[in-house]
Length: 137
View 1 (cartoon, helix red, strand yellow):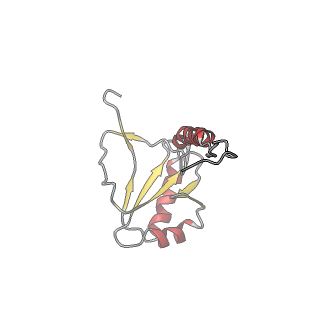
View 2 (cartoon, rainbow, N blue to C red):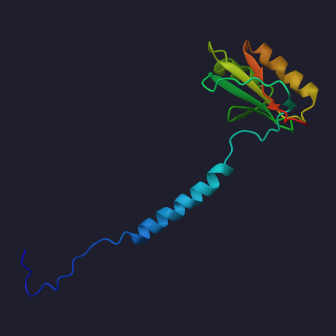
View 3 (cartoon, one colour):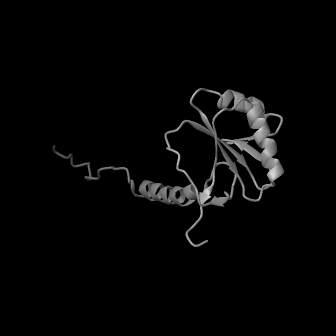
């Protein structure tokens, strides 16, 4: 291609360096903040020596009881009054299992009350979650 005498040979291109810089900064921000994002309640599970692993592909719903007694079904905050209807619609599907995550500091009476609500909602399959004790503890 022949350039005319009026053309000074400048070819305009988009400079992508600032774009790449911004994308790398965003990537670093997401990589740093992603591990900090946690769904559900922060629960310290009780420890036991007999822990049985449940296959990850088991269809399940998680009911969490926080140290303050607050309830969360999967990622939905709930109350004692609303829990039975939520359990009925989410857990009573055939093959679904309820996993109960209760903080180690939750009073026993609170856990028993929630278990009564679970049973009253017709949940037939439930596992109580715990962490395995470290050897020598």
